[in-house]
Amino acid sequence: MTGLGPVAWPPAPTRTERLVPRVPEARDRAAYIELFASPEVGTYIGGPRPRGQLERAVPAVPGRRPGLFVIDLAGSMIGMITLDRRDAERPGHVRPGAGEAELGYMFLPQAWGSGYAAEACAAALGWFADAVPGEQVVLCTQSANTRAMRLAAKLGFTEVQRFEEYGAEQWFGVWSPVAQPGRATRRRGPVT
Image (cartoon, rainbow, N blue to C red; front, side):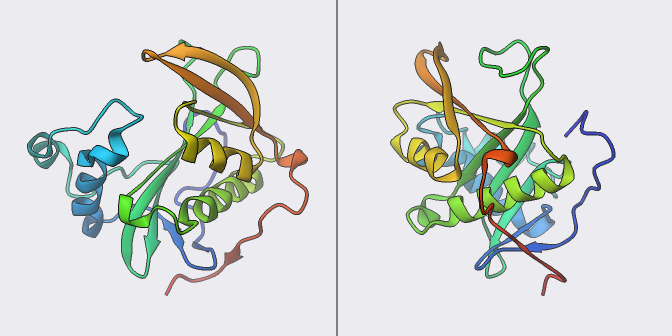
């Protein structure tokens, strides 16, 4: 994440009740390719990418950059979460000058329906609120993506606006750490 100031990356090891948000490792490459090649995952993000193209393009250690967390369940990657600065050229902003932190996430279909996305996103938002106190986070999803809309509400995002982008209606919401009573807590400690 650029422009966050002195944020330590990678972050200290974090755990949730069932998950370990962590930096990507070489062992995640196959799951990373599966994630981006999945037709189910690609439904609301422009479709799946060709597996052969991903095999050639994905590096040995995929996605290793500040703001990207692999979500690990029992030693295997089941998804990923990103915190990036929203491009000023895109519609949807809550502050002058744009550049808000934006939450993104993708999970393998076999991990859907178990609450992993909510648990992992809450942990990432908690980390962000500790790393950059008081800063809001935005989330944008197609309004047709009912699963994402339910998750946004569960996480405490509030709708700000809707607009047309990528040929579909988009829902745009904001999360504020000061508006989150009883914010989810995380256990910190060595990852085993």
